[in-house]
Length: 244
Image 1 (tube, rainbow, N blue to C red):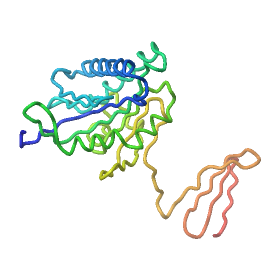
Image 2: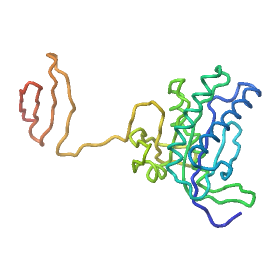
Image 3: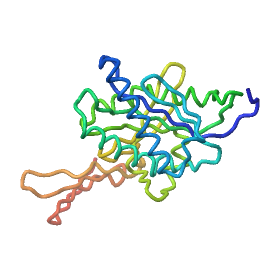
Image 4: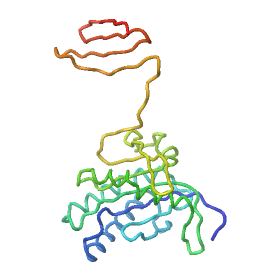
């Protein structure tokens, strides 16, 4: 085991509802997933043969080569994988269709003499992949949605929040992950889902109660301007001031 860690980006995918399909179907979808992921990684400018790939039974874990651009794991990799999974699913009945949970993280990894990675970063990845947030996101998505992606806060800060080409940070929403001994924030992306983000609190001195719709159809807004008065305005210009 190399006693000096290497900073690597890592991803893992796991097939939803893989059990109960029988051995033939399982082997078929495993091979299809590996093919889709291999092609997606290669089309992202990452050499598949330079990656450390581990079989998870009904999924895969991939440790990227040192120096891999983090953003490439989102764009174009995720876009490519979604397209390939959708293409596969269009050609197969339910038994052969693939929907996956996907987790992505970056951190220190120890590479063993046989090329087997180890370290706490891999534990973080496993907890995210198996998290309730990721499972429920995929389960509640339409059947045509082939993937739900969860990225760590660290990965989001370094690769997504900067607005790199092809990556829309607004399409990710923040969630909490609590699995076994691990608890942290993460960011969820589901293709085609409404964009979302963390809730924002207004300041204490000025608060908007949001637009409302009176019975006559005019839009109105109520704002607390300070601690002693409330202004209520409507679209036609009426303004009423009420002491609180």
